[in-house]
Amino acid sequence: MRLFLFLTLFTCSLFSLSIEMSDSTVENGKTTLLEFNNDKNIQYDKVVVGKKSYKIFNNPVDKEKSYVLIPVSYYEKPTEKKIEIYYKEEKKEKKRVLLLKVKDGEYKKETLSVDNTKVSLSEKDKKRASAEYAEAMKIYKTVNQKSYMSKPFIFPLDSTITSDFGKARVFNGTLKSYHSGTDFRAAVGTSLTACNDGVVVLAKDRFYAGGSVIIDHGQGIYSGYYHMSKLDVKEGNEVKQGDIIGLSGDTGRVTGPHLHFSFRVGGEQVDPLQLIELINTNLLKGR
Image (cartoon, rainbow, N blue to C red):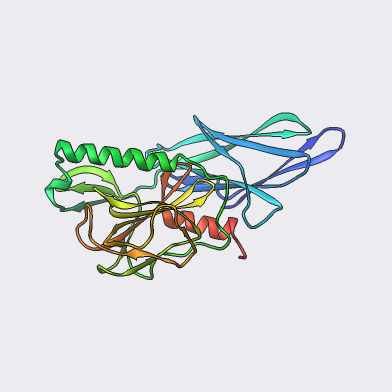
């Protein structure tokens, strides 16, 4: 359902604050989008949802609009949340409030058998995994004001999806996590491409994710490619959509060769396929 909200502001003359919301009801682990019409009399500041604040960015392909992506945590329980929009109209600070309903995604469970050393960790491995997590979170919390996006996102390979986002994962009989991305079938050595333009901010081997590449697409949007057997890019490399970034593999915590494809928005792990459809259909529509 697409929701259109038009809030009319009256001062010495008539102005219109136009807000377009992609969906007012969202499952946990998914994302919604707010779009605003740019007006010389209105300055957009930020959007606040609970304790989290999100910057409002200029649309990368439409100078007449601004936008904000609002990710919903996988761990969010069904509830109704306030979306507080802060802006200035003729230098006067104002606020508008919308409501966002979060519903249960009803994700299924899947049972996996992996090397026990990837489940029952030694102190050395715990320290390594913890350091790698902290490194990644520092990256995700960094918001590049620039956007590299100029065209709709593509998938990193043409293959079958073997595991969807959000499934609760039981490793060797113990519930350990949820599936934080989408898995694609990929034999070892399959070429993987960048899903959009961006800058490589991480390229290394990691304990759980194995050979890993993370690409910053700007404005708080990051894509991740894991379990790779070979990396053809380095940190700091600029990539274009379709560039080969490396080869798929079976490194890290895996049951077999595949590509784990993931996205973060505003630091939050979200369903990559839903996010790509949301951005392509709304933010980058017609490109």
